[in-house]
Length: 499
Image (cartoon, rainbow, N blue to C red; front, side):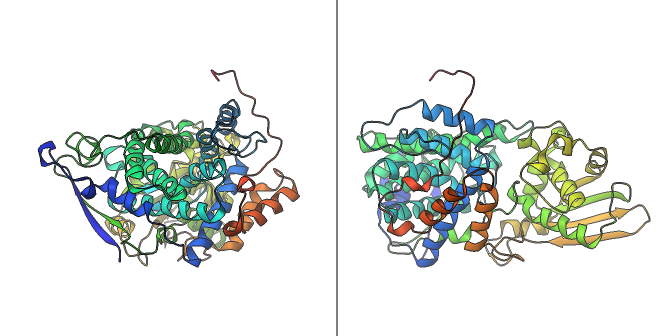
């Protein structure tokens, strides 16, 4: 049975024993070798396919090209066979493969998600864990266990500890989870994983300015950096190097100065000894390339387009999206970011503008990872006119449902109220995206494969598409993991850097 671990700040003279520290408890979970259930193993395969889908679709995008060029500039380190990089035929050192692949996976903001006290993309754990597994010749069964731990720890931290409330970027939960996953992969002892978790957290705390205002390409790089730091933290810990302790609970630690302060109190759920690690089953992927809180709104807009095809910028006076606190203040009009209504804003910024996303999905009846963000699409006069009529407002009930721990009522959508020029109104609502496990069309293996085929079409050769799918679906039997990335001729040409 899952155990709730109390976490608070301790003064230095209180001398909190290591065994009572959150980092140690995370490490204890990671050092226990637990077999995955069939459902969990199946979902890990789904998410490996999902990551490859979005990485493939982003191979020609500038941040991915730059990260790949950096990785290709580094030779394989001497202690292993090297790791593969999406879109490259050159093996590299595992930390640089984690970096390049992490950027490719995150660039389109199109892979899996988990939202609770904090929010996250747990699939970001896969690139660093896989890169180490490839470099050190681990098996598919070992990789499976490592990924399960990465998901478990990140989801458990996200359920309990809010980072965004204090403007700390959510990848601060990714560093520890990836380090823990690598620890499980390699069968490391609790002490070593404990030190790695502490170092990974210490080096991956940063502010949320990367997701505020004019959002830059660093949004894709931030989780990749956390994964790279996790690889390096484990390497240092394996060499006997230690971390700041207690990293979470210390008087000058992360909680005391970056989060809820000296009076903080959390209860972090972690699986009991011998308990199956099931957290990955609580996560959900994206059908659309947009911030997760936009997924349900895209589906609602598509439905409105089907049911009310006459809706236009001229016929609509206003459209108010009643939604959760987070949706309103982070990607809605409550963010008070003028860039969210700027047709010349970056793709990363438009991805975090629910007024823009709802407008385009309502007009087009679809959402596409490239067409929907194209500059000519954002600058259409009728789009700009309608876009400026779309606002958000917090609804306490949708906020409550957003934070609910009951999966049957947890919701990420809301209610739209549209005022029309003829005096009539349209009111509709949606709780979860169609692809959500409780949605109208839940994703299963068939949908993950379709997503990969769709995004790889025209990018990869047909034979490479089938090779990758066959390899990924044989995960538990693999003895060579090099086939879990996709190959192709994608030159990484960028302006000259240092490397």
